[in-house]
Image (cartoon, rainbow, N blue to C red; front, side, top):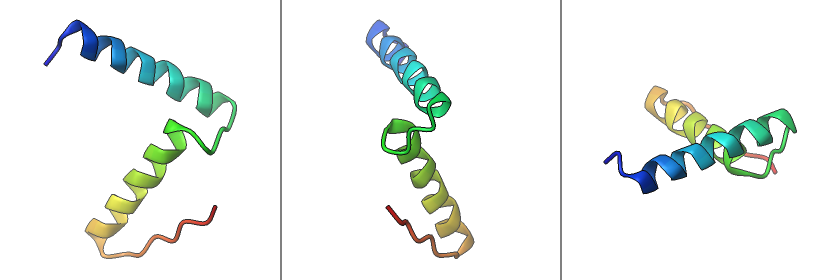
Length: 53
């Protein structure tokens, strides 16, 4: 599970998240995960999430 490939990929994601967050990029990995987490959180609570692009 903690293979060098996984650690390298996780480091890449963290770096990418920080870059996108700092630039307020709404089209990359950071924005996708924010929407995904919001969707699943709302689904658990029984709410509806509307995504507007």
